[in-house]
Each structure stands twice: as structure tokens, then as C-alpha cells.
Figure (cartoon, rainbow, N blue to C red):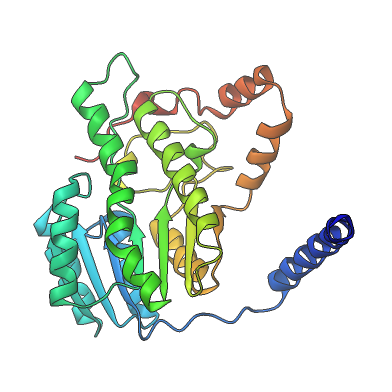
Length: 302
């Protein structure tokens, strides 16, 4: 037994070096992208914002069918018609992912009408943009139900069949605020941190499940209606991401089976600094960059 442990101990650093070199090579050489022509993609919050751009991107890249979930029928209908004009079969269902019974009911309806879902994109989210003491209790509960618990319900609804088919992908549109919170969005930051932990645990749990994978995307501030009015101190140095860029990089990450994606790449520096700097230094960075007060002008979706 001791020789077995010793062998594993000696092999471990070799495996680490191999994986690092492999990752470096993949950054240089063009990767082989997954074919989406047989995939049925369901996007929550798919009627507008990043969700609408995700639907467009999956359609451009040849997805077989696209299913949109959301709470506003007008937006869902407009996006569905646009995707159909692109030549891709598209359906929409009105569904509040924060409502567990509604998620399970609509998941059953999707399977009966459209077929099995092989790519689930958890994109739906809300933000109220208030401090803890200014937040309404019902609004706080709503953000946790939609941003976090909704992913529990949607994943439980579709993952079992993916495991049976040995073909599936769970995608989470998260936020860099899951790793570095800001004042004025305590409900959003908390829910996204919980969502990140959910996806991290799920990703590890799928390691022994052939054909089923997960991708978590953590973008910087994106110029959508949801964060309308948010201002940072140096917009020329840290410009907001375009939703179409987030959508394109997300679909690429799915096709490359990338587990975690930070956007832009400079956000890796933030993660490193947070790991090594004392809290006082991090507070000064927040004040200098303007993230400490960026929600003071927040208006949100109108």
C-alpha cells in the first residue's frame, strides 16, 4: 500500500506539469470546436440582454433548436421571431425560474413539445441595486430565488436526461461580482457568489459523468439595461463589455468545453490581488477604481 501511495505522490507533479503545458498549447493552437448541429439549447432570460445575444450566437453557430424562457412575453416573442428569420427552429415558454413548480411544469412541456435539452444556459438574473437597509425583504428574496435557486430547479429538471443520454452541458452566466463584491448591490453579489459555489461543486461532480460538462462565465460589467446607470471612475481603462462579446465568448467556451471563463482576461489579475493583498489595500483599490461608489448612479432596467 505504501508503494502505491508513493507512486501516486511522484506521479502527481508530473500530471500537473502535463496539464499546464497542455493548457498553454491550447492557448496557442486553434482548438477543435464542438459541433452544435444536433444540440437543443434552452436559454433562461432569453428574451433580451445577453440572453437575446446568446440565442443569436447559438443560431449562427448551427444549433438545431433554441428554446427561450423568460417572464416577458413581448421580448420572448420578438427574439423568437428573429431567430426563426435566421433559419433556426425556435420556441418560447413563459417561465419564472424562481418558481420551482413552474420550472418543473415548463420543463415537462418543453420535453413534450420540443424534445430533450442538451445545452442548458442559466442566464436569467435580477438586480435591485440597493444597500441592505434600503432593500425590501421581498425584493431580496426574489433575487435569491431567480439568481441562485432558479439554477437548482432548472438543473434538476434537465440534468437527469443529459446523464442518461451521456450528452449535455450546463452553462451559468455569472458575474465577476461573485468573486469581488461591491456596495449597493448586496443582493446581486450574494446571489452570484452562491451561484458560483453551486457551479463549482456541480463541475467537480460531473467529472465522472461521460459526455456531460459545465461552463461558468464571469464577465465584468456589461452594457445592458439591467445595470443601466452604473458608472466606474475610469471607463476608458475599464470599458463595459458588449453583450454580443459576452455571448460570443460564452458559446466558444461551450464549444471548447472550458470550465471557467473570466471576461476580460484582466479579471485574473483581480483574483490574484484579492488572494495576496490585505483587506485595507483591497479597500483602497475599490475607492481608487470607483467600484466603491459605482452603484450610486444606478437606475436599472426601466
